[in-house]
Image (cartoon, rainbow, N blue to C red; front, side):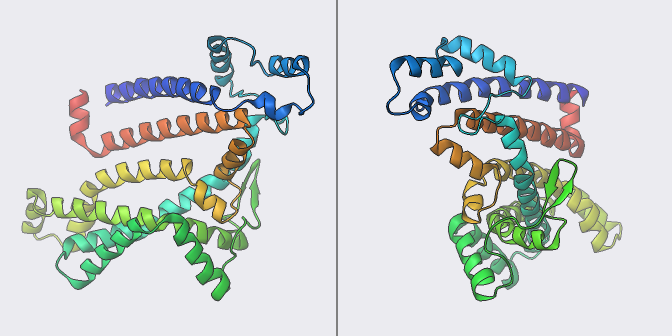
Amino acid sequence: MLSTIVRRLLQTLLVVLVMSALVFAGLYVIGDPVSMLASPEATDAERAAISKALGLDLPLWQQYGIFLSKAVHLDFGSSFLTGESAMRLILERMPATLELATLAMFMSVLIGVPLGIYAGLKPRSTSARTIMTGSVLGFSLPNFWVGLMLIMLFAVMLGWLPAGGRGPVESFGPIQLSVFNWEGFKSLILPAGTIAVAKCALIIRVTRAATRECLPQDYIKFARAKGLREKRVLGVHLLKNIMIPIVTIGGLEYGQVFAFAVVTETIFSWPGMGKLLIDSIITLDRPVVVAYLMLTVVFLAGLNLIVDIAYTVLDPRVRLEGA
């Protein structure tokens, strides 16, 4: 198991290094921050001074070397617009995105796993077919359309939930969370539910497929032959084995929600990292974009490492292969 973890860790570090080069190279050829910061009447000397102050006059390889040395210390420069630390701006918005992604995936797993197991146990029943039809709709409906429909229903027509914004927050040191405040939690339900619709559909289908695959296995038949209660057969023997694909898919989808909740955050005016990214791209605020992308790369790589470790713990075959 230790050898597997070490190998995955080295692979993660290599991925982060390669992605840092791709992020830097991709943003280097996009736009000209000097044209945005300099006034239209600026002279060539003034433009050159701005370029030198930002380090844009150096060769590309030298800029990348400086970028890597500063990235180790989480220093991605200051925002071209506000002058604040780019990483600080990102970290201020990260709790909002994290709680949105966490609640969305919690709702998806809480609803999707039981429905998927039921659909797998009784595949020919009308309710199981209804569940699977609903999962197809969850995949098919555009994310922005689901968000707008939820706003129209629960915010406009019923008036139960706010249509946008984050609402009141509770402070835990430097971290501010709205999930522990009732009014703030109400503001979180609609955006999290919008994301959960598609993710729940995926969890249902993965769980159903895993359940159908595990039911004919010998260990299920043996457990039933021993006279174990059906609840124990399903809750221990079945659930333990179907958790392998659920953990794998759930971890990957959690990272995707964390990194790409841009549309949902924009629709609900949720002050997360995605909305900050859109604003920074529009204004060509390159340090903020780089900080966001690098933080996302590290988060996704670390999350994949955690999923691999969890997979190793759940599946003994992986430990045997590693040994």
